[in-house]
Amino acid sequence: MDVLERIHQQVTENPVVLYMKGTPSIPQCGFSSRAAEALKACGQEFTYVNVLADPEIFENLPRYADWPTFPQLYINGELIGGCDITLELYQRGELKKMVSDAVAGA
Amino acid sequence: MSVQSTIEEKLANNIQALHLEVVNESNNHNVPPGSESHFKVVLVSNAFEGQSLIARHRAINKLLEDELKNHIHALALHTYTEAEWRDRHGSAPMSPPCRGGAKLS
Image 1 (cartoon, rainbow over the protein chains, first blue to last red):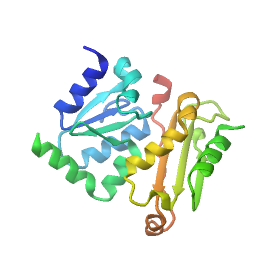
Image 2: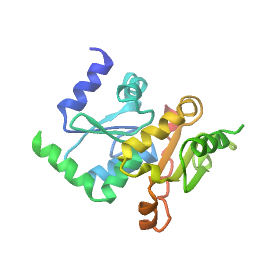
Image 3: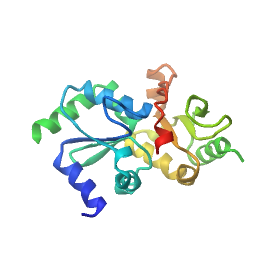
């Protein structure tokens, strides 16, 4: 399967997907770590993809939604943003609702 | 011209800013001294009024496309309208500490 199709499948078959460097328990980038912490604090299960363990995704994810950096958060197949946006939405109290609604609708 | 000056100039020339701060945070990361790889941008502009966060970030990423492709490893973006900036009492979040991932990528 083409890598862009694989990414499309990941983000559409899972309500909440975080592409990150490392894993939520052993993050390998401060920005990925913070985004994962904010998602964990939302109290719902989420899917993550360790881009350091999947070179094809690491290389191609930036062109999937035209977003140059990691981490990247997708909810219901739509790019929400990177670390700064994830944190800002969490601090505004919006992220928890977005995540809960997506998980409930899945 | 340094990467930092280029970022400052491109943003200042393209977005009407009330406050623009470009900080080289490379020293906090696993890169040689003097590197220009990790930056934080704080930009306050009323041009952001009515724009979603993702639209603001996309606009900046587009302006800095070449730098992101060739020089910048990490770019923290904090974008506010004048009212949002006032609500935050004129302060932007701190960037996170390094976890070493740059070395692996």
